[in-house]
Structure formats: structure tokens, C-alpha cells
Image 1 (cartoon, rainbow, N blue to C red):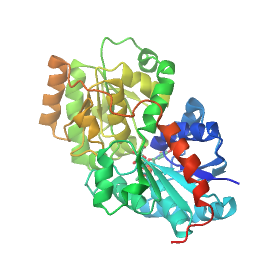
Image 2 (image 1 turned 45 degrees about the vertical axis):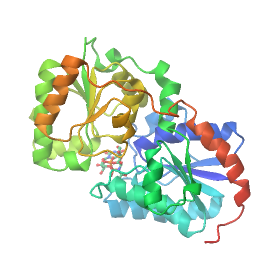
Image 3 (image 1 turned 180 degrees about the vertical axis):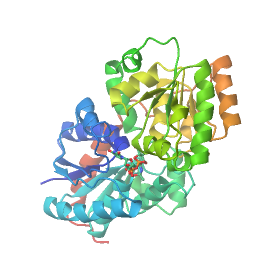
Image 4 (image 1 turned 120 degrees about the vertical axis):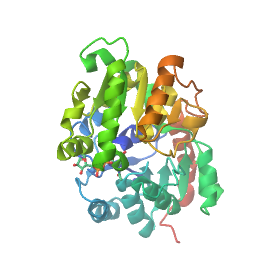
Length: 367
Ligand code: UD1
């Protein structure tokens, strides 16, 4: 009998599900993997399965892109019959993407227990679709695993019983530890030996869906590029919008790359002078690598990367970006320490807890 049906759907899920699947197998738990197909390009999906040694999914929903409503609804419609046929004791979801809330909602309403990995992170910005996914997924989860201690206070504030919450550390950093030695050298990805370079990633709707904001960000990146070459692995949403808004000329002189694989991105970050990003995961990975990170957002749901790590919030304001960049160039930027339990063992902690938790909860939950 399948004990846990694990769900992954979009790029940032794959590096989180990889160590969890491995730890469940090592602990002798019976798990299956379901891919919703939210991300489907080889560069956004299959390449990660290959790089990270994730077993091929047992189920694939092939939902593809759409508006939030269409994508979420499509995952829900296609997930329900799979859940019905597999009849797992619990489903396990990771992160905060549309696939996370869609599958959690279907399972909770069918009385199947929900386990959420990376629970309790809050930006307190409801304009961010992921924030809505986080709050709602946590509300309907039975067991919540957190990456940093601040998450518990967020959950308690929302009325969640602390007995359901366990601080285990960061599974994404498990993946980083496992793969750091295999990372592709930056010179290979960049096609040149550069004395120093910066890496930029940009895909948040708040930064890339408004033409003026996107243009102003690309302008300041162009300025930075005049002192330090900037490499940009370009997300499909961002590429599409740059073309749609007629901003392609602003990419001139930048080292534009297609979305890169996990091992390439790891190598690019490890060897970079600095990273500029609006990603959630990259704020954490740069903290784990000790590389200065300027986050192009007004807030972060990962405060430990600011309090203990190498992250600085600069928002989309060009003056703030210029000042933080100058600080990195003159003073080397922020140094930090590795947060507690970001030690490569988070997934094993999860598996050990589940080994005891699952047998104690046989049968469908009676609400
Ligand atoms: C999603 C997640 C976000 C995560 C990001 C990483 C939600 C709400 N957002 O945002 O949290 O940080 O993934 O990438 O779930 N596209 C392709 N090929 C693909 C996938 C997408 O071309 O394989 C294009 C499509 O035009 C699509 C657009 O990218 O409409 C956006 O994809 P979508 O999954 O809706 O959201 P992301 O911006 O990727």
C-alpha cells in the first residue's frame, strides 16, 4: 500500500522533492511521485529529474500553463481520480506553487492527510500569489515541517496547533550539499573564464509583468554590467514579457542564457561575485553558499537569510540597487553564517518523523 503520494509541479519543487523521495526510500516507506506538469519545458522540468536523480513520476497530470484559476482547477480535476485510485495514507506537498495548494485542497476534502514541507514562511504580502498558496496550504495541512524557526510564530498567529509543526531544516539545502561537488564550472556555462561576474534571475510578476518596472530594472542591470559582467538565465515568463514590451534592446551586452539546469545554476552561484534575484530559493542557496545576494523585492518570506545569511533586500528601486551593488564592490558585501539545520539532513528528519507518524494514523481522517 502506498503510504505517501509526493507531489511536485514546478521548477522550485524538484530540488525539494528529490531528497525527500530518497530519504523515504532509505527509511523503507512506500512512496509514489506525482508530477502535475505545471512546468513542462525540458529546461524547466525534465533536466532537473535527470540532474537530481529523481525517479520518473508514477503519475503525470500534464496540466501545462494557464491563468491561476485555470491552472489550479486543472490540477484539482486531474489529481482527484489519481488520489482515488492510489489511496495513499497521506500526500506530501512542498513549497508554495499553484500545484501545492491545488493538490492539498483535493486531498483535504477527501479526508486524506496533508503533509507540507517548507511550511510557515510568510512575506505578509497578499499581492504575491505564492503567499496565498502558503497560507491556505498550511491551514489544511495535518503535519507541517519548517525550514526556519520564525515559521512557527507565523503559524501559531494563524491558529495552527504547534503540536502539528516540526522544525526540520531546509530540504533544498540537502540537495545543495549533495550536488555542490558536481556543480558545472561557471566558465563552461558562460563560455568564458571571467575574473568576476554577477548572476541575475528575474521572474516575479511584480517585477516582470509591468513594462515600466521591468524596463527600469533592466536599465540598472545594464549599468552594473558596465563594471561587472551580468549573466541572466532567462525565465520563459520574463523572456516573453521583454519581447511583448519591446525591451529586447536592453538585453544588449548582457550574457543572456536560456533557463539553466540545476548543476549549472549551482556552479554559477557558487563562483559569482554577487547574485541579484527575486527568487525565494536563491535567497536561501546564496546564504548556504556564503555569496552576497541582493533581493529585488520589498519583502521576503525567508527572514533568516537577512538575519543570519548573506541576503540584503533592495526592492526594485534603482538607487537602492546601485548603493547595495557599490557596497559589495567596495566592502565585499554581507557575510553570514549557516542557519540551524541547513546541514544536509532535513529530509532524513522528515522521513524519521513520518515513520512513526504514518502508522499511528491509519485510515481516512475523520474531520
Ligand atoms: C511558478 C511559481 C513560482 C515559482 C516559479 C519558478 C506559482 C504561483 N508560481 O511561477 O512560485 O517561483 O514557478 O519558475 O505557482 N512557461 C513555459 N514553460 C514552462 C513553464 C512555464 O514556457 O515549462 C511559461 C508560460 O508562458 C507560462 C509562464 O511561463 O504561462 C508562467 O508559468 P507559471 O507556471 O504560470 O508560473 P511561473 O512564473 O513559472
